[in-house]
Each structure stands twice: as C-alpha cells, then as structure tokens.
Picture (cartoon, rainbow, N blue to C red):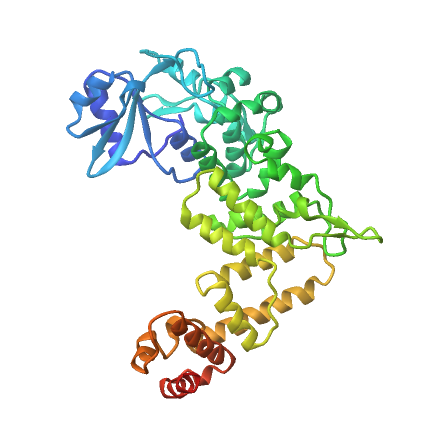
Length: 443
C-alpha cells in the first residue's frame, strides 16, 4: 500500500473526525503532489461528517463555504478546508450547481472532481483511494477528465483552462478526448469571471512550461479569453531578425524569461501590437514600426480587462514600453536610459530585451547580446558608484532653490531638471556647491 506522509495537523483533523465516527481523507491536489514528490501548497480534507458536525468537533472554525459543505478548521492560525462528501446538482451557468446534495459515499464525491489525477483520496487506514485510473494517468503523464469530459466542462467551464494549466505545471499531455471536448466547449469560457481566468493564466505563465499557452491557442481557449494572442499566432514575420510568427516568438520569449509574475506577463504581451502595425515593403520584408507603443496600450487594456492589480499593470506597462529601447553602450547614455526608464524597472527591461533577442533568429544575435551585456555592465558600475540618475539623488532640492529666491512653481522643476541633465552628463558635478553656483547662473 502506497504511503504518504501527512502533516501532523492533517493527521490530527482526520483522527478527530474518525474518533467521532466519521470517515475522513486528505483529498485532491495535495495527494497528487505527494505522489509526484512535489510539496503541496495546501491540504484539503473531505469527510462524511456534515458541516455542523465538523463545527462541533473542532474549537475554531470559519464558515468559508458552508452552503457547499466547506468549513475551514483553524489550528494554530493555519487553516484547513474540510468539505463534506457531496453530489452536485445540475449546472446552469458553466460554473454553479443549482443545488448541492450531501452524501455518505466517498466515491460519489470523487466522481464530481475535474481530472483523474485530482480525484485521489488518502488516509493511513485505506491508503490511496483511486477509483478513476488516476495512478495510471500519473504514470503516463496524462491530463484526463473524470468520466465524460463534456460533462465535467459543462459543470465548470474554467476546467478547460485548468487542463492546460495542469499540463504546463506538470509537463503532462492532455488526453485526446479531453482536447476534443475543449475544442467544442471553449466558447463557454465567456461565462467565467475575469478574476478566475486571470488566476489560471498566471499559474500557467509561472509554470515550468509557460509556452504551453500555445495549447490554449490551438484548443480555442485564447480565442475567448485572449483573442489578441490568436492574431499574434496568425501574423508572420518575414524579416531577417525573426524566424517565427509573432505568437511563436512570444512563446519562445517566455522560455527565456525567469518565473517572475510581471516579467512573464510582459514577455507574453511585449509584441502583442505587431499584428496591427505590420507593413510589408517592396522587397517583401515585414516591418512593425511603433509596435512597442501599440503593444503597451494593448497590454494595459488586456490587463485591465482581466482585472489585474495596478502594481502589475504599472510594471508590465514599463517593461513593454521600453523592451525595444536600445541606448548606446556608453555611461552617459546608460545614465539617461536609467533615468528615462526608472531605476526600479531598468534591470527587468534588460532581462526582457535579452529574452526577446534569444527568441529571434540567429541574425546578428551575438552582436545584440554583446550590446545588452555591455549595457548591463555599465548599469552595474553606475549603481555601484552611487551615481546620480534621478532627482531624488541630486545634491540640490527645491528648498535650496526657494532659499535662493526662486518662487514656488514650475520654475523650480525646470531648474532642477536642467541641473539633473548636467549631472547625468557629468556625474562628478553632483556636488552641492557646484550645483548652487549653476543654479545662481540660471536666475
């Protein structure tokens, strides 16, 4: 019998429920991850006990989803979801069942779950309960629905995107019958909230296989949730610098981008404006003039539509806007570039530029990468020497100018920016006395 090491608190919950005469098991993804020697992000418990009975057994509980049978048991400020075995009634909106019926049968509960590899239950007494061939699918590396795929996707349309997400996280293939159902039912994703779509897309992008977003395109998912990506996959790039369609270039860029949330999103969207900026010259060469600015606007629109937070939108907007910005490889130009882009964003913009370059053709790639390396070397030196690259490190303030008699207003900003321009050109001049004399000459 396969043994899984359950955390002490999970053991305690299961033991307490069993002592009261009920069945209880760890269930779902935590069992799957344990079988794959992955560390579960959280542990869920399923039980034959009704919610009120669970509340009677444990001192501290929260009614997090009691209408669906879920009570959160709090142990030392850590929460564990404990859900009663249930059978879902008919679904009416591709997400919510009309009713939930509690059952005393574990298998009936597991039958309503999305994929075979998520339909495991486990306790030390019974071992792994696998009623739907999940172990075989784990061994083969397959994502397959429990029962009829069309039924599972009809219950919750988000499961179609979850299939691609699990595929990307685990490196598994999606079963052919499951793919066929996705192709047929993908339009139902329009019934799913933007917040739920966003959460799955981010998990997919942060996986070890972010380029599996390609599968979401091929299965018709992005046509509903991210149609701009479809246009990218359908746009060729006949240009010496490129060897892929815009969409495939974006997938390759993702593979060269570290798993940072905003960077991966920017890698996905940095050329999303190319389809609408494409022109072809007389020699058949494609050009995409102004694509960075258009991509920036489109990226912001997409992220707002998907209800992303303002911090993520701000970062992605900066990264996309400047991903094609190429300062000259000298210290003065790099200081100006840091000032223009922003100290907080500059290193990530360079990371995106490198990923973008690695996803292009081999034409001039060595020279392009050498240019990026030199920019980064200069940036590192500038920061190590604490050179002034913004008004906040300028050895002159608005108060200093007011003390010289400059009236409050925009003139103060104009003088400070002229002084900053001087210091960006010659960092050794960031000395208060020098700047004071310069300021006096401007009065």
